[in-house]
Image (tube, rainbow, N blue to C red):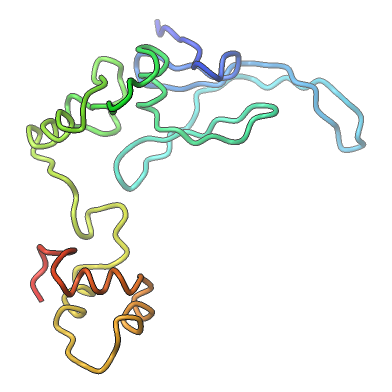
Length: 182
């Protein structure tokens, strides 16, 4: 049997389990029907679908009356619910190195240094290049930029690849994409 607990700030709307699941609760709200009349409507609670992001983490979308839609990492919600607010200077750690394993037994708060140690321990160093979820360029494009000798300015190169001219400069000076040969 799963044990559920309300998410602080979302009590009465959403809960998390120790297994890393998030669900909405059954609730009745007053809403305007198509003719503008106020009616009560019951929303049945359900398990929320978790979106898998490029970086490997799971995310859900929360919403409630008079609140803006809120997108949250599942691991943050589970730790907030079961361990309390994140202490200043700490971040969430996945003990087994699997980013979408959001069971409470796998999560804990820790320093950035301890999180980096976990990544090395599990053979998963920081993602660089195309493996980074933030990358806008491919390795092939970076090789072309590094080997290009011509009249094109940094700004024109940047426009061609839809990145900033600062990014082009950092690549050419070897401050970004260091691991790629020119």
